[in-house]
Image 1 (spheres, rainbow, N blue to C red):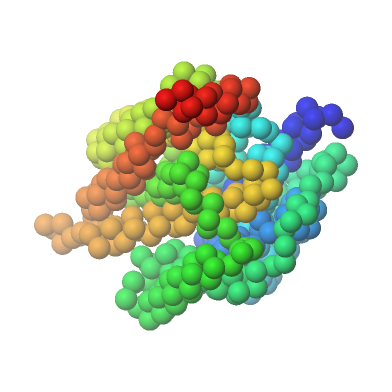
Image 2 (cartoon, one colour):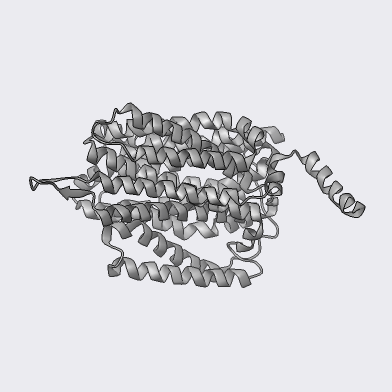
Length: 484
């Protein structure tokens, strides 16, 4: 097939696969209460449905880049998609919590492969100077799917059954799988090397235990043995992993890629932005339901404008990117979004519902520019043979940022207390806990701003100049030096 056709094929496969995986993560959260009731398990126990998915995803994530390089990007991506789809069917058939958790582990393992391998496929297909156009497609799995999740999940649970939360993945998964099998072109890296077993045996349990501690620490207590022991063990294993990888000539997770200033800085911005955005999307719905006594569906409809803002931003981002450049665009977007988070924290019982909706739309519009610019700039200096491992490293940073944001903001709410006893002795919501947590989400964005401001003028040249211009600049530099 022609190159243009491969761009279309790669885009369709990536967007559809990511949309399905992103939708699944938020749809399931809405269905947890119904799952617990149907399977006759306590609400505290049914949370393992989400935890098992996140932990298995963390185990597989570091090895995704090597698998794609060694076995072929098409083969690994479509195998992961097939496993994710089959595991969705198994989740729907589950008649016990143990069976459901086992199927969710399979889903998580497949999800851990989908993102980095799919991202490597996409950025190998599109050269740096064409990646600004990708923002119009990437916003669908990034913004629309997570926002639609609570709305679709609430409707399915109310009108059908929680099992259909998983069954909806089947038609999408099967169609994309057939489309990719027929039209997607294979890519392998001859120099992929052997699997770094030492790195895998350190990173898999290290990331799994760290993610478990971060996601469960606020609920179970950070000093409880069930959190402290796995958390400390995970950090020790990850520390050992860093030392091992830096000494390995063929590492599984190539930390040497962080020597590239642009890739390193964009990774930090992505990590802090993910912590702020997903932290806000975790805190605000809780605040809206608890403080304003809103229903789950009303809360989902109120937060949905954030996704609309992201979608609008994705259409304008290529123009903004060319006009302002990555540094100015990302910095301006993060400043505006952090101010909007502060204003969002002032939401209270007397607030007009349209005020948070407008603020969330504007926040999505701002962060849509920042997230899109970061994604298309990050890999500008990465050579195609390194793309698989670079996308894996980028995804690991992003996932850790999301988990860290939710963990710290959840801890803030737990420490302050989301409920308080009024003068009448009746327990009532404590808006202050949610407000300070939202200020914490704004602080994450400001950390990303600090990273963006550290960029130098030449750092983003590879991502903004056409290929011919970059070549002329490279030839002119030695001549200029000789003239001096």
